[in-house]
Length: 99
Image (cartoon, rainbow, N blue to C red; front, side, top):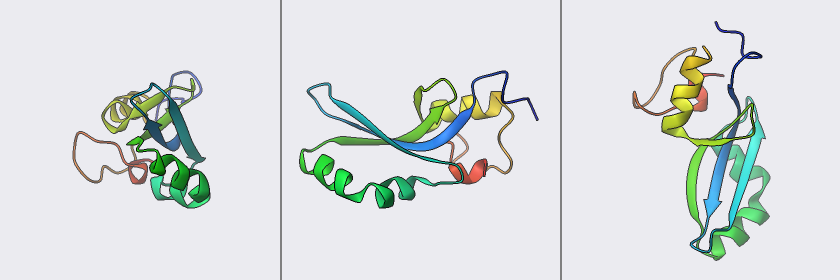
């Protein structure tokens, strides 16, 4: 396994909410949290965000603070040696793949 302290790696499961106005909000949970935990822990916030018709993108926050979607997340996690067992579609990252 690559030393995750020396390269960008996946830190947290996250969901990006974005609106046509350009407003963006990222909700995330630390590992071993899953995407559904983002909804459960922040439910009142999510209800408000969804009420204003925000688009949801599931992904991850990296060690550099960057939000990446599931496809880019797979590239980051693979390069960092974080994949333990690949689940789901081959081109998408799931938190179950790492923890």
